[in-house]
Length: 259
Image (cartoon, rainbow, N blue to C red; front, side, top):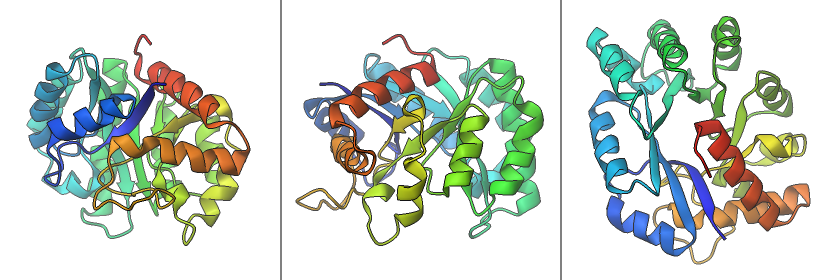
């Protein structure tokens, strides 16, 4: 049984990327989307993806935390790299007002420019949002008719927020957050209203280790993706195998990949 991890921070310094990829493939997670968050990562992700053409795709974007570091030339480079074969989405991009590592106005501007690149390239967006939902959907609204969809990455919000993203045509990324019974209550309620054709499973590794998995590991890995499906299976009363098949197909459709 094959799995698709639609979000892994494979360039994180805690990882030996080649070992993580091999672990994933051995566990049946044979397709990974490598997330990027700043220009310094883009060519590294591209090189890694080209080394594993059957297993890796990657995003190209500027995370809101890094928005203050963005330079005009970065958007030119983004436009170039996003056209490459295995570059499947613009992001992580969006807004994060939780700690405001970049000023909100700068975040809004950098997000807006990335949405324009996504439309020009005909690629979906890979969305990040924390404590900024209303601002995020306001910025997205005028672009929706031209935007080629996207993913609400690592969704942790409420049922109304989930339904709003679905109504805008976005897929919903479910991570190990769902497996954390100390903070998952809002998400548990939300996913009960999640249409099956909008479910996408992702680890966000090395973050968000699924706490229903034993033994506990120091870092989360794509190989642990089935544990997220197990928890979601319990919550929405569907077989894990159904979630595997559906999520894989949804991720392929989202990213424009022939299964």
